[in-house]
Picture 1: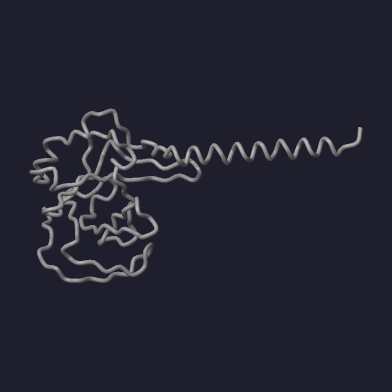
Picture 2: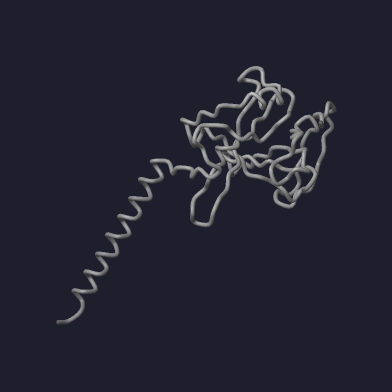
Length: 181
């Protein structure tokens, strides 16, 4: 098992995706069991970019080319109610709800929306900096839950579509009237 570092040295690395990044050694999160698909990677830092306030990046420190987008599932799915299995509570030493947070891996597609893995959230113990991706045993969640578009954006989108349709209809009518009989 890998232990979280006790020292608090400041380290700067050049990341392929984000450029220069400075972090404290105490900010490292350790995944003793790795992550599915990245079993050999154990040490990560969480990066939040100013322009992406709803996305956190789980940046590997062993392979600087690996960074996974994460989000707070409760922001996008207010009714999300994961039942954390006992093995996860014990292995991460989860004592109190305020001692840990739950994040979920996000996946974006070209024009097809953004999805969140609610079936296997990442549980992070904020006290000992240990983390683990935990498959849930129940709840009906999937690895690709489509993030709903907020009502405001959906209404805006509907208004834009309605305006475009009205404009196209007006243009077609004007063109039809301009054509001599």
